[in-house]
Length: 276
Image (cartoon, rainbow, N blue to C red; front, side, top):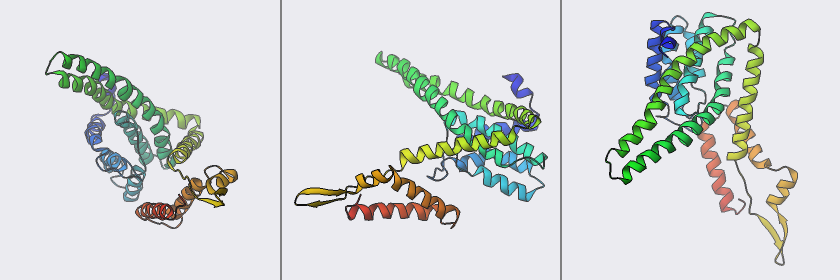
């Protein structure tokens, strides 16, 4: 691992160390629309300030890119930060670089790394550390909680620290190879497709609508609204609501806060009317 860090120029190693420490603020200011975007942007600011020092417009665009939605396992987050930092460097140096590929690659990695990170660190490492600590605790050992914290956090912090450098190093080499082979356009489209699939899956699982409205005559139900909607298209209301919010957000520039309040009010009204 020491060879990994030494192969990176000293000034860039210093910035990567700053990104590592700043990454602890990743979820300090979470919002439904952005999740850890503000922390991600804060971690990348040393790179953005250096790479776009003489390009104010480029710096603004980079900050906007960094403030896009970001959500993955904290331990794996620094790998993406390092990779994005290397792509921002290339973007600042090469005028023909496709800046859209930065967020496309970033989005495509969030889901897979979240799955790997949650499985290894929350599903395996935490359970093992807790099992050892509980065994010590049952014998009356007062060091049990400290042992748990050390067993869980030391491997997590090492992966997080070196992941920053690994992402940056691999990102630089990876981008050069991809551009040389002409695969960047294909990669961007593939990454965007993966991102859209992830968003579609989240929409299907998180946006729900179940109507309780029924028309009955002489004690017998003659119309069930939910059943009728399902016959037309299962999930038609959640899909329609999602597309409407997207249209208002992108085309009409309606604030995300206004949309959230509007959805809450709509839910309350439908509940009071006995529709949902």
